[in-house]
Every structure is written in C-alpha cells, then in structure tokens.
Image 1 (tube, rainbow, N blue to C red):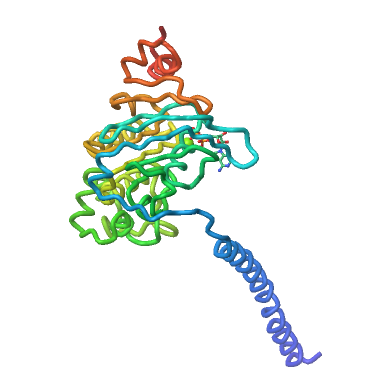
Image 2: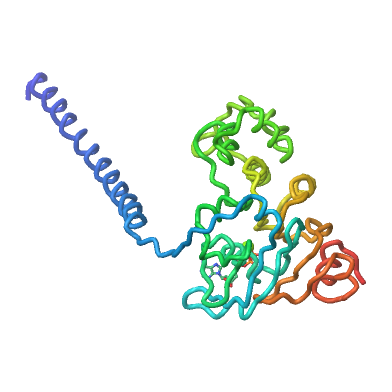
Length: 307
Ligand SMILES: Nc1ncnc2c1ncn2[C@@H]1O[C@H](COP(=O)(O)OP(=O)(O)OP(=O)(O)O)[C@@H](O)[C@H]1O
Ligand SMILES: [Mg+2]
C-alpha cells in the first residue's frame, strides 16, 4: 500500500473512533441525567399531604408561651410505636436539655415539632394552638434548628451565613459569626469572608459547619431554638465553643438542646432523660445525680468518675 493511502487510512480510522468514544461518554451522561431528573420529578409530583391552618401568633405570644406535647402517640410507618401517651412541656424562656441513648427518640421529638412527622394521636401545641392549626411557614420560621446536616451552598461563607436571614447586612452577619465563634476560623480561610464553600469550594470540618449553623440561627433570631447534636464525636474545643454559644443565645429564649455529651447540658434549667420514647428522669443536673439512676451512671462513665 502506498504511504499516502496508508496515512489516509490511519487518519480516517482515528476520525471514526473518536466520535464512538464520545458517544459512550454522552450516553453515560444521558443516563445519569435521566436518573436525576426522575428523582426531581418524583419530588415535584408528590402531593403535599400536610394539612395546615392559618394561625400566626405575634412575636410576643411566641416568646411567652411554652411548647407542650399532649398525649402523643407516634410510630414511623411499619415500625413499633416510638412514643405512647407522651406528655411534656418545654418551658418558655428556659433551656431544656434532652439526653438519652441513640435511638431513644430525641430527633423524632424535633421532627414532630417542625411537622416533619405527624403524630397518630395527641398533639403538640404552642401559643395555645395545636400545630396543625398553624400556618406552616409561620411555624417553621419561628424555629431555628441547628443540626449537623447543614446545607452549604456553593457561594461565599458570608452568603452562606446570611442564609439565616437574607436581608441581614454584612455587619449583622459578622456579628452573628462572632457570637457563634465562627469568625476565628473564617479569618483563617484563604480568602476570608469571600472564600467559596459548599460543593467544589473549601471544605469545612464538622465543628466549623456546626458554627456556621449556629451563626445562621443567631441571625434568624427565632423565638424557639433547637440544637440537635447528632454525635458525641466533637473535639473539646468545639464542645466548649458550643457551650459558650448556647449560653449566649439561649438567654430569654425557649431553647431545646439535644446532646450526647452531658457536659453540654449540665447547666440547663431542666434535663430530660429519654429511653425508648419515654421520659425516665427529669430535673436539674444536681437532682439527677442524686437520683443515682440512668443520668448519674452516664455522667460517671463520661467523666471517668467511678462511684
Ligand atoms: N425516618 C424514619 N423512619 C423510620 N424510622 C425512623 C426514622 N427516623 C428514626 N427512626 C427510628 O426511630 C427511633 C428513634 O430515632 P431518633 O432519630 O429519634 O433517635 P435519637 O434519639 O435522635 O438517636 P441519636 O442519638 O442516634 O440521634 C429509632 O429506632 C430509629 O430507627
Ligand atoms: Mg438524633
């Protein structure tokens, strides 16, 4: 074969192979895009089942009213009952700690409060109205939730904190970060306040994310503050910062603190010990120690004091 014909053949083969490889990639992309769109469409198509009312209390009412659970029965679908005839009150303006082993139902309590789950009977009421009489938006904007599953958006850390109250000024954001003890780590970021975080951006540690969540809650300034610490696996410094932040922002605000480390809730006005959906102990730190029960046992394990 002549050199010319040979080169043309090689050239043509290459030209032919390249689109084929691309076709494989495009097909893969197409499949992934289809899978994602199906999921999004499913969410869009699912009916909004939650019944809501029109009740919208004033700020003052929310601040001076306790949240009470009245004879709650609750089970997740196809699961054994979690709460049976559970009644308890979260006193307004006070800090209530909730502790208990994993699976005891602590997060589920909060899900009921925010109406992410609905009780089978009984109800949660606040400002004298059962939650299903409330306007859902009014309810959820009156509760600031800090948990470890915080969503970071692909934008600067400044905008990520501002998400707590989109109309807040830069000064407000910086002040909130100060209260949440987030400003120190923000200053250390490569571009300070303008550092991009979230997907593809600078990665934040668990403790740092928690502080961003607290700063958002400070900005939101809601009458009911809920902290759900999902793990005890935080370092001592984060733990201490969390305690200081709680103390600052829970003043004169109804606060619920779910903690794995008892030291986080030790100064709470009241501590509830939850076991398998039941409140087994209830009181202040000192009272619970005297009881010499579940709490006292956990305390001695966590502090290393053997009795
Ligand atoms: N979405 C859900 N669907 C079904 N069951 C659930 C769901 N969420 C929690 N559960 C179950 O309800 C029980 C209580 O869970 P919950 O998350 O309230 O516990 P927790 O006290 O917050 O635990 P942890 O300390 O580990 O956070 C567990 O047995 C759990 O398996
Ligand atoms: Mg939990």
